[in-house]
Length: 345
Image (tube, rainbow, N blue to C red):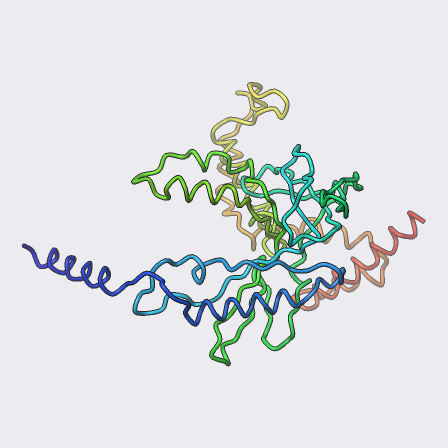
């Protein structure tokens, strides 16, 4: 038996015999429960009659084993307002809801987008609970988009609060408590059609088993407010997008293909167009963000500056420093906005 095989067996034996199943409450679970209790005690900022319904998720709640070295680095808690509910588009509004929901519930439809896994929410119904039989009747609501604001839940201010994607991070590094990721969401009692193939997907070794799959599906899902990477404001740089478009154009020209928007089999590039020459020019320019930004400044912005009043156009006589350029651009932008408002009025 080789040394590598012996080492594999030793490591395997170590893990199998030192990891144990969770059979009791541990410190992490207790901390998570305490955080849930603090969330329940608070109310949404815009509706004092509603409550937050928390749910422990992530490693603190889902780890079935307890290794010798703790693997739980933080506590994940999702929470949804008791006066909001999401339903898949086309589904009728429910007539019964779990007891934790309020007597008046705003219902929004989940509208699919062109990006897999990303959806829109649109307010459509208002549910009102009948005191006689406990059922909910619905009224059509004005349709308008609904956004999830992660800043609605502020807590008691005892821990540092940072926004990280859809989560509120409470850093408790100065204490013995773990940090907490609190994720606001909207509850959906139905399994989403976007994941309709998951319950019947082929599974090796029958994991998870059918009972677990059924329990997950029956529990529905939660809608979390997070933007697709292509839509995030901090990444939506115009110059970066233009560079990508020019690179894509170069490939299309090289391959001699540019489909008509309405007619797929209609190619807008024919043999009379010297695509190789244009494509080689685009590639030879080594277009990147610095190159394109400089081109825009020298060939477009300078011409725009000449259209401005003299007291503004002279600001661009010395834009060698970025700070001077930023100041000049800000002045032009303000002038442009003010002149547009006066024209519209």
